[in-house]
Length: 398
Image: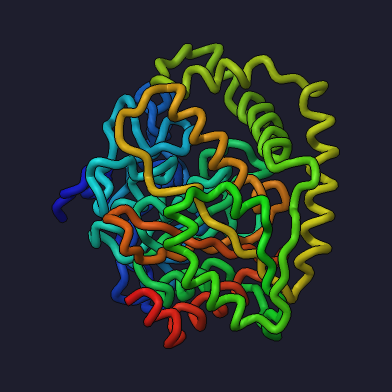
């Protein structure tokens, strides 16, 4: 296998399928945070690789894929300790965005997204805490899925912030994304159709003008398809407050998970990662508790809003993928803006699918996202397949 796009940590790590199944004939790659028996993970940082032992057991999510006929073909680069949304790794390099090599691939599941977008593997596994599957999927022009929190086993995966961490996956086509979901979400039932489509003013205001223009044909189609299309305001206090709550709760959990290791090893972190760990080291329960109360209110509000029959439509990210090697201030400004969109599903633990939309505005892809109520994962994937297969959607992309 040729790694044209520098996506892999170990492209020679191959595991044959355990048996035949619904994924037979498909290959996949995994982010270098999933345990594979006998193999050491880097988690995107050489000091992590140096100070941790080889895994004693393979992650159950990987086992499910192998037992259903898929073939593992390599482990992929991640941002350091998964604590970034950029996809630029100071130590191991930046995977090349196949859609536009002058732009970042997005992170932290950067290598996994690039392996799929570059047609090296059929699908890939990543993790999504603050957007780390959804964002690189959007920037690389592929499909991506973050499941309901806790619905896919995350044992034997290096944690970031456990109350937000999920196993996500990416594919070039909607059917493969759904087929992988049916394997990983094997106990979920499907019943009924979604009858309500919701658009939120505050999320669409975050999208830049070109992105809104590129997404408008799909936007109009969704309104036509809905029995009850309506506009809502998600965050009366403002999405920056939601994003700040996510940032503080996540930071506290990250330090709880990795602070002892950071203090003992004093790892070398790249730009941005170092500053975020420094911020996290100062967070206390007094900082987190008010944000946890806000999170409870947000979760209750979103679950009541969506129930089991509504979909929330929003842009995945504010705009096209940023250029490579931007300055720290520009990167942080874009990170804060993007987190206002990605924190929504994270705070409430909801499933979200990312759908690539072809645009005539340039090479960089744009992406639409759809959030459903809790445990509606398979229904959301089925709906997404019907939507992208519709004649009007296909004409809109053409």
